[in-house]
Image (cartoon, rainbow, N blue to C red; front, side, top):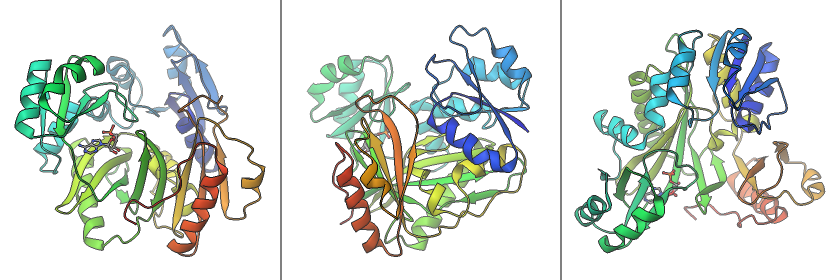
Length: 369
Ligand code: AMP
């Protein structure tokens, strides 16, 4: 099939790289003017004049980022099948709708309120109890558009700093660790889930994912699968969905979801039988889904801002480098390294070694140890 991808960044690149062995073709539509995918046929279109040409070149359409104009995706859906469906995109690109969907499905979250002014933010902060996290309803990612409030009186400053007309404000969760579950649903409703990953962030950016999350009990994995299945069904979902969770003393709380392949699933390229990218391609083209079992304990280390000299890293027999062919810039995701090991102990040593070779990387640590 001829697959169209909205967006031409690293996720589009990795979708294509894992879709080629299945005999698929890729055309990437780039509204940003800065395509970096480096594979497939790229249609740059900052002016929005080449959509027709893009649609003529593809049989179905998917996307690699969720901050797309909803009317455009809806319009595309009238000409070609769009997976995941535009309705799922609408929910995922608005934190208020997303939180409300979790709530309506009985998926637990931190207590939250939706506020439309600084005064409402102050009031909600007093009701929820400090500290709280305020987040813009739209456009936030990697911790952007967010502020932690330690007193209700911080509301006016936080409101001005975030600079949006609507915010979600929620209790600050004292989590044990951050987890994510990734699931894939086919056109026929077949669903598969990956083992959960444990995720470590610094400055709001993911730095390490370890999968399967160490010390994970079957009941918690099963609970996460139940939560994501509810979402897949509700959204009539097709493709890969990621759900970010907090593990707390009282169980799992949902934080947010992403309607696409996800950074916390990059470990599947080397650590799972079928990668999240291949399974996304299988799902949207109506193919049977691939096995999601892990091959071994795996750690994904993100390369952020600069790569440094990668020669020493390339000499390591256990490290697999994935570069995105992007210009270095502070805070930018330039690539990642997947590390496989026979035990978590060995994985810890190997991940620490890889992190020490990457400039600016925090030291490797598990959030639980
Ligand atoms: P988000 O953009 O919602 O994924 O938030 C980015 C990061 O901020 C998360 O991965 C957490 O580390 C942290 N965070 C977000 N919401 C909360 C919360 N309610 N309580 C504690 N930490 C949070």
